[in-house]
Length: 199
Image (cartoon, rainbow, N blue to C red; front, side, top):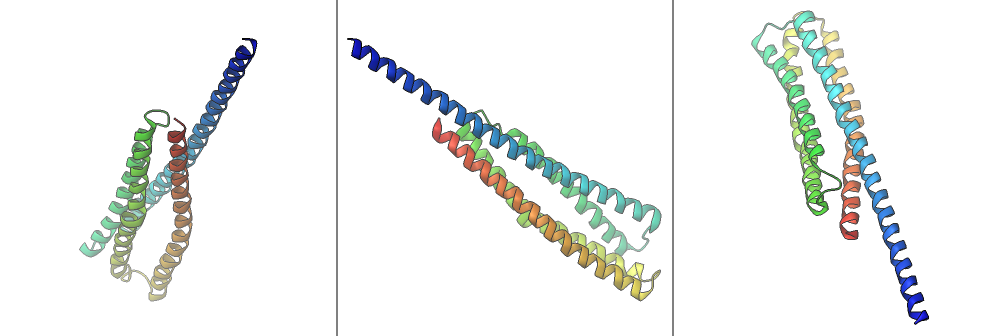
């Protein structure tokens, strides 16, 4: 009888410590997810701020410094401005979609939503962003003929070459940031899968 009681007591202690360690590991997983989400939000808000500054600078440039008059140039300026506005809108939608994914509720459903969000971001980076950059570049070079009326040939060449060089540098920086974001989203999915397996 005494041995049975001790055995029961030992089992209870063992299961209690297992439950506590399981709760601790779940808390650690949730904290990791929260930290990675914060890092991604920082990326989204940072992107919006950079795009907004660019949008404001370009808009002011075309309004005050070099108001374009030719139809081709106006279409070009419009492509540049609309491209930036559309990209800002996409980042706002991304933030909204990311905030809809709850870490603690319906973990299986949350994992599905995270996968969908991951696919959404992949589509943005792989399809939509290159199209926007392409249209922005076309818009930039559509303005060149009008600028050639007011600038020397070499200044124009310098501007066009600078655009390409800055574009390459930005491409490298943005690509690195995108890879980091996609890596964090992949890690979040793995962490959520771990939580699902533990439940």
